Amino acid sequence: MAILYGSNVKKPSKEPISSDDDNPVDLAAEFRDSNIKEVLDKLDLELIGLKPVKTRIRETAALLLVDRLRKKLDLTAGAPSLHMCFTGNPGTGKTTVALRMSEILHRLGYVREGHLVSVTRDDLVGQYIGHTAPKTKEVLKKAMGGVLFIDEAYYLYKPENERDYGAESIEILLQAMENNREDLVVILAGYKDRMDKFFHSNPGMRSRIAHHIDFPDYGADELVAIAKLMLAAQNYRFSPEGEKAFREYIGLRMKLEHFANARSVRNALDRARLRQANRLFAGAKKNLSRIDLMTIEAEDIRASRVFKEGAVDLDGDEGANEIPSIG
Amino acid sequence: MMTNVGNLVTQGQFSFLPPLTDKQISAQIKYALKNNWAIGIEYTDDPHPRNTYWEMFGNPMFDLKDPAGILAEINDCRKTYPNHYIRVTAFNSTRGVESPTMSYIVNRPKTEPGFGVVRQETEGRCIRYTIHSYATDKPEAERY
Image (tube, rainbow over all chains, first blue to last red; front, side, top):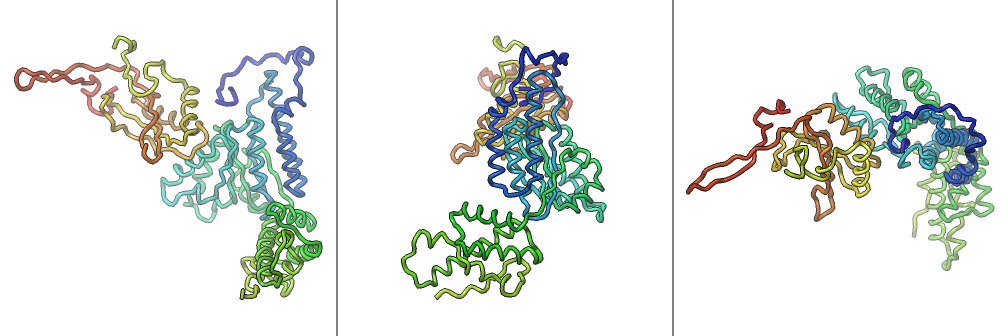
Protein backbone atom coordinates (compact mmCIF):
# COMPACT_ATOMS: atom_id res chain seq x y z
CA MET A 1 0.00 0.00 0.00
CA ALA A 2 2.90 2.30 0.68
CA ILE A 3 3.82 2.03 -2.98
CA LEU A 4 0.28 2.47 -4.13
CA TYR A 5 -0.49 5.62 -2.27
CA GLY A 6 2.94 6.98 -1.69
CA SER A 7 2.22 7.47 1.97
CA ASN A 8 5.15 8.89 3.78
CA VAL A 9 4.69 6.71 6.81
CA LYS A 10 8.24 5.99 7.75
CA LYS A 11 8.61 2.71 9.47
CA PRO A 12 11.13 2.80 12.26
CA SER A 13 14.22 1.75 10.39
CA LYS A 14 15.03 -1.56 11.90
CA GLU A 15 18.52 -2.76 12.30
CA PRO A 16 19.21 -4.99 9.36
CA ILE A 17 18.43 -8.12 11.27
CA SER A 18 20.73 -10.95 10.47
CA SER A 19 17.77 -12.11 8.47
CA ASP A 20 19.63 -14.31 6.05
CA ASP A 21 18.49 -17.26 8.07
CA ASP A 22 15.18 -16.29 9.68
CA ASN A 23 13.36 -14.90 6.64
CA PRO A 24 15.33 -15.22 3.48
CA VAL A 25 13.83 -13.78 0.31
CA ASP A 26 13.76 -15.61 -2.94
CA LEU A 27 15.01 -13.50 -5.80
CA ALA A 28 14.09 -16.12 -8.37
CA ALA A 29 10.53 -16.37 -7.06
CA GLU A 30 10.18 -12.60 -7.06
CA PHE A 31 11.45 -12.56 -10.63
CA ARG A 32 8.87 -15.14 -11.66
CA ASP A 33 6.03 -13.40 -9.86
CA SER A 34 6.67 -10.09 -11.52
CA ASN A 35 6.26 -11.63 -15.00
CA ILE A 36 9.11 -9.38 -15.95
CA LYS A 37 10.85 -12.14 -17.86
CA GLU A 38 8.03 -12.20 -20.35
CA VAL A 39 8.50 -8.51 -21.11
CA LEU A 40 12.25 -8.76 -21.31
CA ASP A 41 12.01 -11.73 -23.64
CA LYS A 42 9.54 -9.88 -25.80
CA LEU A 43 11.95 -6.99 -25.87
CA ASP A 44 14.70 -9.33 -27.05
CA LEU A 45 12.51 -10.85 -29.71
CA GLU A 46 10.89 -7.76 -31.11
CA LEU A 47 13.77 -5.37 -30.93
CA ILE A 48 16.70 -6.17 -33.13
CA GLY A 49 20.13 -5.03 -32.04
CA LEU A 50 20.20 -2.19 -29.50
CA LYS A 51 22.57 -4.12 -27.23
CA PRO A 52 23.47 -1.22 -24.90
CA VAL A 53 19.81 -0.32 -24.51
CA LYS A 54 18.77 -3.83 -23.61
CA THR A 55 21.61 -4.17 -21.12
CA ARG A 56 20.56 -0.95 -19.50
CA ILE A 57 16.94 -2.01 -19.26
CA ARG A 58 17.95 -5.30 -17.69
CA GLU A 59 20.06 -3.45 -15.18
CA THR A 60 17.18 -1.15 -14.34
CA ALA A 61 14.82 -4.08 -13.99
CA ALA A 62 17.29 -5.83 -11.71
CA LEU A 63 17.63 -2.73 -9.56
CA LEU A 64 13.89 -2.42 -9.19
CA LEU A 65 13.50 -6.08 -8.37
CA VAL A 66 16.22 -6.00 -5.73
CA ASP A 67 14.72 -2.83 -4.37
CA ARG A 68 11.43 -4.60 -3.96
CA LEU A 69 13.08 -7.38 -2.02
CA ARG A 70 14.87 -4.86 0.16
CA LYS A 71 11.56 -3.26 0.92
CA LYS A 72 10.25 -6.59 2.17
CA LEU A 73 13.08 -6.67 4.70
CA ASP A 74 12.44 -3.06 5.69
CA LEU A 75 15.65 -1.85 4.10
CA THR A 76 14.06 1.32 2.82
CA ALA A 77 16.04 3.51 0.52
CA GLY A 78 13.39 5.88 -0.84
CA ALA A 79 11.83 5.61 -4.25
CA PRO A 80 14.59 5.47 -6.85
CA SER A 81 14.55 8.24 -9.42
CA LEU A 82 13.51 6.60 -12.64
CA HIS A 83 13.41 9.54 -14.98
CA MET A 84 15.24 8.72 -18.15
CA CYS A 85 16.68 10.29 -21.23
CA PHE A 86 16.79 8.44 -24.55
CA THR A 87 19.11 9.86 -27.14
CA GLY A 88 19.64 8.58 -30.64
CA ASN A 89 19.08 9.20 -34.31
CA PRO A 90 15.59 9.06 -35.81
CA GLY A 91 14.08 5.62 -36.16
CA THR A 92 16.29 3.89 -33.61
CA GLY A 93 13.36 2.73 -31.52
CA LYS A 94 13.19 5.31 -28.75
CA THR A 95 9.40 5.40 -28.65
CA THR A 96 9.08 1.63 -28.84
CA VAL A 97 11.49 1.16 -25.98
CA ALA A 98 9.67 3.81 -23.95
CA LEU A 99 6.45 1.87 -24.42
CA ARG A 100 8.15 -1.30 -23.25
CA MET A 101 9.70 0.57 -20.36
CA SER A 102 6.32 1.64 -19.08
CA GLU A 103 5.23 -1.97 -19.17
CA ILE A 104 8.29 -3.10 -17.23
CA LEU A 105 7.85 -0.41 -14.61
CA HIS A 106 4.21 -1.36 -14.31
CA ARG A 107 5.02 -5.02 -13.76
CA LEU A 108 7.47 -4.08 -11.07
CA GLY A 109 4.85 -1.91 -9.41
CA TYR A 110 6.70 1.36 -9.82
CA VAL A 111 3.98 2.98 -11.85
CA ARG A 112 0.41 2.14 -11.04
CA GLU A 113 -1.24 2.10 -14.46
CA GLY A 114 1.59 1.63 -16.89
CA HIS A 115 0.24 3.79 -19.68
CA LEU A 116 2.41 5.98 -21.86
CA VAL A 117 1.51 9.58 -22.60
CA SER A 118 3.52 10.78 -25.56
CA VAL A 119 3.80 14.54 -25.96
CA THR A 120 5.86 17.15 -27.77
CA ARG A 121 6.45 20.83 -27.18
CA ASP A 122 3.02 21.76 -28.56
CA ASP A 123 1.25 19.81 -25.84
CA LEU A 124 3.18 21.44 -23.03
CA VAL A 125 3.86 25.02 -23.99
CA GLY A 126 1.09 27.58 -24.30
CA GLN A 127 0.68 30.49 -26.65
CA TYR A 128 0.18 33.36 -24.26
CA ILE A 129 0.96 34.32 -20.69
CA GLY A 130 -0.82 32.07 -18.24
CA HIS A 131 -1.53 29.40 -20.81
CA THR A 132 1.52 27.23 -20.24
CA ALA A 133 1.10 26.25 -16.59
CA PRO A 134 -2.42 24.78 -16.89
CA LYS A 135 -1.48 23.08 -20.13
CA THR A 136 1.59 21.43 -18.68
CA LYS A 137 -0.26 20.49 -15.52
CA GLU A 138 -3.03 18.93 -17.56
CA VAL A 139 -0.52 16.74 -19.35
CA LEU A 140 1.16 15.83 -16.09
CA LYS A 141 -2.18 14.85 -14.59
CA LYS A 142 -2.89 12.63 -17.57
CA ALA A 143 0.49 10.96 -17.21
CA MET A 144 0.16 10.32 -13.47
CA GLY A 145 0.43 6.66 -12.68
CA GLY A 146 2.26 6.09 -15.94
CA VAL A 147 5.08 7.32 -18.09
CA LEU A 148 5.32 10.76 -19.66
CA PHE A 149 7.30 10.56 -22.89
CA ILE A 150 8.49 13.92 -24.18
CA ASP A 151 9.67 13.57 -27.74
CA GLU A 152 12.23 16.06 -29.03
CA ALA A 153 12.46 17.56 -25.58
CA TYR A 154 15.12 20.11 -26.60
CA TYR A 155 12.47 22.18 -28.35
CA LEU A 156 11.12 23.02 -24.91
CA TYR A 157 13.97 25.41 -24.40
CA LYS A 158 14.63 28.10 -26.95
CA PRO A 159 17.57 30.17 -25.82
CA GLU A 160 17.24 32.63 -28.70
CA ASN A 161 13.90 33.85 -27.41
CA GLU A 162 14.04 34.87 -23.79
CA ARG A 163 10.30 35.38 -23.61
CA ASP A 164 9.59 31.88 -24.76
CA TYR A 165 7.20 30.04 -22.47
CA GLY A 166 9.15 26.79 -22.72
CA ALA A 167 11.18 27.68 -19.64
CA GLU A 168 8.01 27.92 -17.59
CA SER A 169 7.00 24.48 -18.74
CA ILE A 170 10.41 23.07 -17.82
CA GLU A 171 10.09 24.57 -14.36
CA ILE A 172 6.75 22.85 -13.77
CA LEU A 173 8.10 19.60 -15.13
CA LEU A 174 11.06 19.75 -12.80
CA GLN A 175 8.80 20.35 -9.86
CA ALA A 176 6.61 17.39 -10.74
CA MET A 177 9.65 15.19 -11.38
CA GLU A 178 10.86 15.96 -7.89
CA ASN A 179 7.60 15.92 -5.92
CA ASN A 180 5.62 13.24 -7.71
CA ARG A 181 8.41 10.76 -8.06
CA GLU A 182 6.22 7.83 -7.10
CA ASP A 183 3.40 9.01 -9.34
CA LEU A 184 5.10 9.39 -12.66
CA VAL A 185 8.21 8.67 -14.66
CA VAL A 186 9.39 11.17 -17.23
CA ILE A 187 11.30 10.03 -20.30
CA LEU A 188 12.90 12.65 -22.51
CA ALA A 189 13.92 11.73 -26.02
CA GLY A 190 15.78 13.41 -28.82
CA TYR A 191 18.89 13.60 -30.93
CA LYS A 192 22.09 13.26 -29.00
CA ASP A 193 23.84 16.53 -29.78
CA ARG A 194 20.77 18.68 -29.29
CA MET A 195 19.86 16.90 -26.08
CA ASP A 196 23.36 17.56 -24.76
CA LYS A 197 22.94 21.23 -25.54
CA PHE A 198 19.55 21.19 -23.85
CA PHE A 199 20.97 19.67 -20.68
CA HIS A 200 23.86 22.05 -20.76
CA SER A 201 21.51 25.01 -20.51
CA ASN A 202 19.20 23.23 -18.03
CA PRO A 203 21.49 21.71 -15.42
CA GLY A 204 18.51 21.15 -13.11
CA MET A 205 17.02 18.83 -15.67
CA ARG A 206 20.22 16.91 -16.13
CA SER A 207 20.71 16.29 -12.43
CA ARG A 208 17.17 15.00 -12.02
CA ILE A 209 17.55 12.39 -14.70
CA ALA A 210 19.44 9.39 -13.48
CA HIS A 211 19.41 7.23 -16.56
CA HIS A 212 20.85 8.42 -19.84
CA ILE A 213 20.51 5.79 -22.52
CA ASP A 214 22.05 6.20 -25.96
CA PHE A 215 20.49 4.38 -28.90
CA PRO A 216 23.07 3.31 -31.51
CA ASP A 217 22.33 3.29 -35.23
CA TYR A 218 21.42 -0.02 -36.83
CA GLY A 219 23.74 -1.97 -39.09
CA ALA A 220 22.60 -3.21 -42.51
CA ASP A 221 22.01 -6.75 -41.26
CA GLU A 222 19.94 -5.50 -38.38
CA LEU A 223 17.85 -3.41 -40.72
CA VAL A 224 17.12 -6.41 -42.92
CA ALA A 225 16.14 -8.40 -39.84
CA ILE A 226 13.86 -5.55 -38.81
CA ALA A 227 12.31 -5.51 -42.28
CA LYS A 228 11.59 -9.22 -42.07
CA LEU A 229 10.01 -8.76 -38.67
CA MET A 230 7.87 -5.92 -39.95
CA LEU A 231 6.74 -7.93 -42.94
CA ALA A 232 5.95 -10.96 -40.81
CA ALA A 233 3.79 -8.79 -38.59
CA GLN A 234 1.75 -7.82 -41.65
CA ASN A 235 1.66 -11.34 -43.09
CA TYR A 236 4.06 -10.60 -45.90
CA ARG A 237 7.43 -12.06 -46.68
CA PHE A 238 10.35 -11.64 -49.05
CA SER A 239 11.10 -14.09 -51.79
CA PRO A 240 14.81 -15.10 -51.63
CA GLU A 241 15.61 -12.69 -54.50
CA GLY A 242 13.47 -10.09 -52.85
CA GLU A 243 15.53 -10.29 -49.71
CA LYS A 244 18.72 -9.97 -51.68
CA ALA A 245 17.33 -6.93 -53.47
CA PHE A 246 16.28 -5.40 -50.18
CA ARG A 247 19.74 -5.94 -48.74
CA GLU A 248 21.18 -4.04 -51.69
CA TYR A 249 18.54 -1.39 -51.32
CA ILE A 250 19.42 -0.85 -47.67
CA GLY A 251 23.09 -0.60 -48.54
CA LEU A 252 22.35 2.16 -51.06
CA ARG A 253 19.72 3.90 -48.96
CA MET A 254 21.96 4.13 -45.90
CA LYS A 255 24.38 6.27 -47.83
CA LEU A 256 21.72 8.73 -48.93
CA GLU A 257 20.48 11.68 -46.94
CA HIS A 258 17.47 11.64 -44.63
CA PHE A 259 18.08 8.08 -43.65
CA ALA A 260 15.97 7.33 -40.60
CA ASN A 261 16.89 3.75 -39.68
CA ALA A 262 13.84 1.59 -38.97
CA ARG A 263 11.46 4.31 -40.09
CA SER A 264 13.03 4.36 -43.56
CA VAL A 265 12.71 0.60 -43.64
CA ARG A 266 9.03 0.83 -42.82
CA ASN A 267 8.46 3.42 -45.54
CA ALA A 268 10.35 1.35 -48.07
CA LEU A 269 8.27 -1.69 -47.20
CA ASP A 270 5.05 0.29 -47.50
CA ARG A 271 6.02 1.33 -51.00
CA ALA A 272 7.09 -2.20 -51.87
CA ARG A 273 3.64 -3.37 -50.85
CA LEU A 274 2.15 -0.75 -53.12
CA ARG A 275 4.22 -1.97 -56.05
CA GLN A 276 3.46 -5.57 -55.25
CA ALA A 277 -0.26 -4.85 -55.36
CA ASN A 278 0.19 -3.02 -58.61
CA ARG A 279 2.24 -5.85 -60.10
CA LEU A 280 -0.43 -8.37 -59.20
CA PHE A 281 -3.11 -6.12 -60.59
CA ALA A 282 -1.36 -5.50 -63.90
CA GLY A 283 -0.05 -9.06 -64.16
CA ALA A 284 -1.46 -11.65 -66.49
CA LYS A 285 -2.00 -14.22 -63.80
CA LYS A 286 -5.64 -14.35 -62.94
CA ASN A 287 -5.73 -16.94 -60.20
CA LEU A 288 -3.56 -15.77 -57.38
CA SER A 289 -2.46 -18.13 -54.67
CA ARG A 290 -1.95 -17.33 -51.02
CA ILE A 291 1.80 -17.33 -51.65
CA ASP A 292 1.43 -14.80 -54.48
CA LEU A 293 -0.42 -12.42 -52.20
CA MET A 294 2.16 -12.76 -49.46
CA THR A 295 5.39 -12.50 -51.37
CA ILE A 296 7.37 -9.35 -52.07
CA GLU A 297 9.50 -10.02 -55.14
CA ALA A 298 12.79 -8.48 -56.14
CA GLU A 299 11.12 -6.33 -58.81
CA ASP A 300 8.95 -4.68 -56.17
CA ILE A 301 12.08 -3.49 -54.47
CA ARG A 302 14.15 -2.74 -57.54
CA ALA A 303 11.58 -0.35 -58.95
CA SER A 304 12.68 2.11 -56.29
CA ARG A 305 14.32 5.29 -57.42
CA VAL A 306 17.21 4.60 -55.10
CA PHE A 307 18.37 2.00 -57.60
CA LYS A 308 17.72 4.01 -60.74
CA GLU A 309 18.92 7.48 -59.89
CA GLY A 310 20.54 6.97 -56.53
CA ALA A 311 18.36 9.70 -55.08
CA VAL A 312 15.33 10.17 -52.93
CA ASP A 313 12.68 12.83 -52.91
CA LEU A 314 12.77 15.30 -50.10
CA ASP A 315 10.05 13.39 -48.31
CA GLY A 316 11.92 10.16 -48.87
CA ASP A 317 9.15 8.96 -51.14
CA GLU A 318 11.38 7.48 -53.75
CA GLY A 319 9.78 6.00 -56.84
CA ALA A 320 6.23 6.83 -55.93
CA ASN A 321 5.53 8.38 -59.30
CA GLU A 322 7.05 5.51 -61.23
CA ILE A 323 4.17 3.19 -60.82
CA PRO A 324 2.63 2.51 -64.22
CA SER A 325 -0.95 3.56 -64.46
CA ILE A 326 -3.49 0.87 -63.96
CA GLY A 327 -5.33 -0.09 -67.02
CA MET B 1 -30.71 15.86 13.31
CA MET B 2 -30.67 13.08 15.85
CA THR B 3 -28.39 10.92 13.77
CA ASN B 4 -26.16 13.78 12.75
CA VAL B 5 -23.93 14.01 15.78
CA GLY B 6 -21.60 16.79 14.86
CA ASN B 7 -24.36 18.92 13.33
CA LEU B 8 -22.54 18.74 10.04
CA VAL B 9 -24.03 19.53 6.68
CA THR B 10 -24.99 16.25 5.12
CA GLN B 11 -24.96 16.49 1.37
CA GLY B 12 -23.97 13.91 -1.16
CA GLN B 13 -22.43 10.55 -0.52
CA PHE B 14 -20.65 9.48 2.66
CA SER B 15 -21.75 12.60 4.52
CA PHE B 16 -22.85 10.69 7.61
CA LEU B 17 -19.46 9.01 7.84
CA PRO B 18 -16.34 10.43 9.36
CA PRO B 19 -14.39 12.56 6.86
CA LEU B 20 -12.79 10.53 4.10
CA THR B 21 -9.05 10.05 4.22
CA ASP B 22 -6.96 10.79 1.16
CA LYS B 23 -6.62 7.08 0.58
CA GLN B 24 -10.37 6.62 0.61
CA ILE B 25 -10.84 9.59 -1.69
CA SER B 26 -8.30 8.08 -4.08
CA ALA B 27 -10.23 4.83 -4.09
CA GLN B 28 -13.48 6.64 -4.86
CA ILE B 29 -11.83 8.62 -7.65
CA LYS B 30 -10.40 5.42 -9.02
CA TYR B 31 -13.88 3.96 -9.18
CA ALA B 32 -15.12 7.00 -11.10
CA LEU B 33 -12.18 6.89 -13.50
CA LYS B 34 -12.80 3.22 -14.10
CA ASN B 35 -16.29 4.14 -15.27
CA ASN B 36 -14.99 6.93 -17.52
CA TRP B 37 -16.71 9.65 -15.58
CA ALA B 38 -15.30 13.17 -15.73
CA ILE B 39 -14.33 14.50 -12.34
CA GLY B 40 -14.82 18.04 -11.16
CA ILE B 41 -13.82 19.80 -7.98
CA GLU B 42 -16.26 22.40 -6.68
CA TYR B 43 -16.31 24.72 -3.71
CA THR B 44 -18.77 27.03 -2.04
CA ASP B 45 -19.36 28.83 1.22
CA ASP B 46 -23.14 28.68 0.99
CA PRO B 47 -24.20 25.40 2.55
CA HIS B 48 -27.91 25.64 1.73
CA PRO B 49 -29.04 22.28 0.37
CA ARG B 50 -30.73 23.95 -2.60
CA ASN B 51 -27.56 25.77 -3.56
CA THR B 52 -26.65 23.98 -6.75
CA TYR B 53 -24.31 26.65 -7.99
CA TRP B 54 -20.99 25.59 -6.57
CA GLU B 55 -17.94 27.16 -8.15
CA MET B 56 -15.59 24.92 -10.11
CA PHE B 57 -11.98 24.76 -9.10
CA GLY B 58 -10.15 24.44 -12.39
CA ASN B 59 -11.47 22.54 -15.33
CA PRO B 60 -13.28 19.24 -15.15
CA MET B 61 -10.81 16.41 -15.48
CA PHE B 62 -11.28 13.58 -17.91
CA ASP B 63 -9.05 11.15 -19.82
CA LEU B 64 -7.07 10.53 -16.66
CA LYS B 65 -5.83 7.13 -15.59
CA ASP B 66 -4.71 7.67 -12.07
CA PRO B 67 -6.23 9.46 -9.04
CA ALA B 68 -2.91 11.05 -8.01
CA GLY B 69 -3.41 14.06 -10.29
CA ILE B 70 -6.91 14.70 -9.01
CA LEU B 71 -5.88 14.29 -5.41
CA ALA B 72 -3.16 16.88 -5.99
CA GLU B 73 -5.82 19.22 -7.37
CA ILE B 74 -8.06 18.59 -4.35
CA ASN B 75 -5.19 19.45 -2.05
CA ASP B 76 -4.57 22.61 -4.07
CA CYS B 77 -8.18 23.56 -3.60
CA ARG B 78 -8.00 22.81 0.13
CA LYS B 79 -4.99 25.06 0.39
CA THR B 80 -6.74 27.88 -1.46
CA TYR B 81 -10.08 27.51 0.36
CA PRO B 82 -9.34 25.86 3.69
CA ASN B 83 -12.62 27.04 5.17
CA HIS B 84 -15.01 26.28 2.34
CA TYR B 85 -17.04 23.28 1.47
CA ILE B 86 -15.27 21.36 -1.27
CA ARG B 87 -16.86 18.48 -3.08
CA VAL B 88 -15.82 16.08 -5.76
CA THR B 89 -18.35 15.25 -8.45
CA ALA B 90 -18.19 12.61 -11.12
CA PHE B 91 -20.11 13.32 -14.30
CA ASN B 92 -21.42 10.51 -16.46
CA SER B 93 -21.56 11.74 -20.03
CA THR B 94 -23.29 8.67 -21.46
CA ARG B 95 -26.02 9.74 -23.86
CA GLY B 96 -29.32 9.71 -22.06
CA VAL B 97 -27.68 9.94 -18.63
CA GLU B 98 -25.58 13.11 -18.81
CA SER B 99 -25.68 13.90 -15.15
CA PRO B 100 -23.53 13.77 -12.05
CA THR B 101 -23.32 10.26 -10.68
CA MET B 102 -21.15 10.80 -7.66
CA SER B 103 -20.78 13.74 -5.33
CA TYR B 104 -19.12 13.85 -1.95
CA ILE B 105 -17.71 16.47 0.35
CA VAL B 106 -13.97 16.32 0.92
CA ASN B 107 -13.47 19.49 2.92
CA ARG B 108 -15.66 21.50 5.29
CA PRO B 109 -15.27 24.59 7.45
CA LYS B 110 -13.90 24.09 10.92
CA THR B 111 -17.15 25.20 12.53
CA GLU B 112 -20.53 24.82 10.92
CA PRO B 113 -23.09 27.04 12.64
CA GLY B 114 -26.00 25.11 11.18
CA PHE B 115 -29.47 26.23 10.12
CA GLY B 116 -32.38 28.00 11.71
CA VAL B 117 -36.05 27.77 10.87
CA VAL B 118 -37.57 30.87 9.31
CA ARG B 119 -41.34 31.33 9.52
CA GLN B 120 -43.21 33.53 7.14
CA GLU B 121 -46.82 34.53 7.77
CA THR B 122 -48.88 34.75 4.63
CA GLU B 123 -52.58 35.09 3.81
CA GLY B 124 -55.09 33.64 6.20
CA ARG B 125 -52.71 32.97 9.10
CA CYS B 126 -50.89 30.50 6.89
CA ILE B 127 -47.30 29.90 7.90
CA ARG B 128 -44.55 29.05 5.48
CA TYR B 129 -41.40 27.48 6.75
CA THR B 130 -37.96 27.56 5.32
CA ILE B 131 -34.44 27.06 6.61
CA HIS B 132 -31.70 29.61 6.74
CA SER B 133 -28.00 29.05 7.25
CA TYR B 134 -26.53 31.21 9.99
CA ALA B 135 -23.31 31.32 8.04
CA THR B 136 -24.91 33.24 5.19
CA ASP B 137 -25.72 36.19 7.43
CA LYS B 138 -22.23 37.37 6.71
CA PRO B 139 -21.15 38.46 3.23
CA GLU B 140 -19.45 36.10 0.86
CA ALA B 141 -15.90 35.06 1.68
CA GLU B 142 -16.31 36.10 5.32
CA ARG B 143 -18.67 33.36 6.30
CA TYR B 144 -16.46 30.85 7.98
